[in-house]
Image (cartoon, rainbow, N blue to C red; front, top):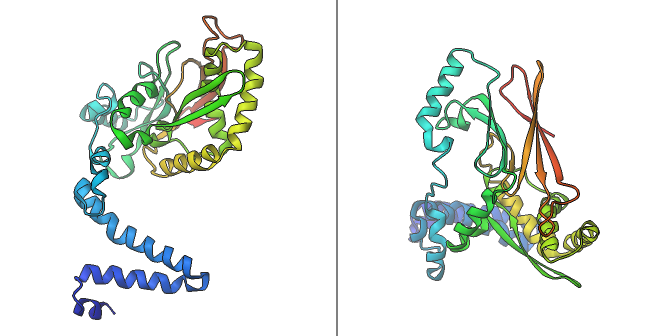
Length: 319
């Protein structure tokens, strides 16, 4: 078949993908014509179109001319924040090498200033396969009053067109008697490496922002939590939220970025309480509810996530 295709004027590569698509269609025949077409299309998309886009980027012939400018940022390498570990790769390698070579264990860094909650390991060589070997643990706390890391990147991404879908998703929620809430769902967490969500975990992620938006509309605090529950029930029934947004978040999580990050919350204010014993260290990441008008909320802490580092292990468990 391949030789015949080449004889008909196709290149060897074109002939190969044509034969593969035909084979996929034949294999899918028992499932019907629709399945055959889908299987052949998938084979062509991933076996021919994807490699061309990877090789030629925004200049690929398979990108519509009208979308080239909008898609160009997807092929651009952005340096988001060099004033952190990523800006000091050689220094990080040297420090991790020192700790590893000299068997210095139980090293945990507790930092902040990036306006987000993170927990994960620091590895010895991120240029190596799988990012190298974990050497120490990094715990990062959000600020109690600063704007979030997500809010900064959301603003920056908004000017770059379609690439903003890696960072945020608009959720407009009409609430009777209150008005329409224009929310920005945080997809940055999933792009960075947060585990794939369920509908319920997506809703829970939105809870603090939703409560704050209702408070900003002047809803009395006694009505906030019941209204949040009612709105979340409506969102769960919405296909835009429970199908479209869920699928997008799951696709971003499936990219598998930064597997050394075990906890990511880039849209939060709060603080961290650390407890140290001979056997372990625990860090309670306490995310705060937003102000109710100019007043502190009755329940300041919205949720608590606990990071646990066991003595002798360069690893962190999240609960």
